[in-house]
Image 1 (cartoon, rainbow, N blue to C red):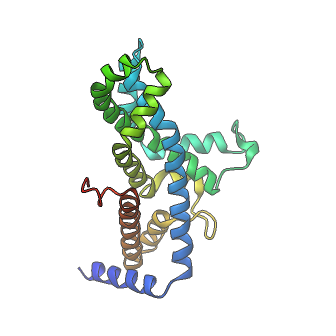
Image 2: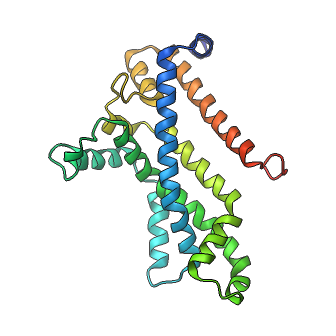
Image 3: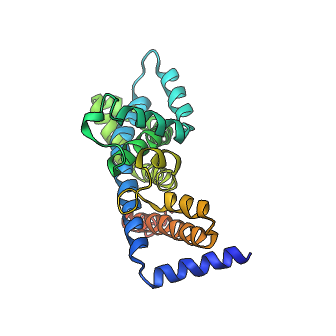
Length: 234
């Protein structure tokens, strides 16, 4: 209990004192996670809607693979991305290893199956309602997908927030490809791991409380901006 109260006190003073290092790693955490979520949404949401609309031979197998990849071990993703981006790897010439870009790539790989799976489940239910209408209107495949994505945008918000929650809490993969370099690739989760390793549990807990508060603030802000609370749909 003493460590928990010390952690709360540490978090309070870090926030009240506008600690420069805390601000830096918090902004980097947000930049990396939000960028990864935006890229993953651009890939996963149209793909999830496509799986809901289109019927093809290996569709069920593909859906099963995507669902299985939701539990992809982050350290394995980190290791694969590390090998690909290392100097001897196929993408080593770009010099991305130990940069925020490498961390974004790892997070995109981790959260894309999660967002695609949630999108597919939401769009599948919506497609059951819209099927006859869109078929009778002779809508093209692209028009059907666009219609489902637009009308199901509130469900897609849940998918995006689930992806953000996993991205901002990720530590294994980004530790491997980012390196936890001070003033370069250190984010909240890697800073927590570092302070825990040093035995400074109060500061680690404090950073943990800041991380939770940041995730809550982003979730509430997105809900408020999307108007779900005002429409009494939250």
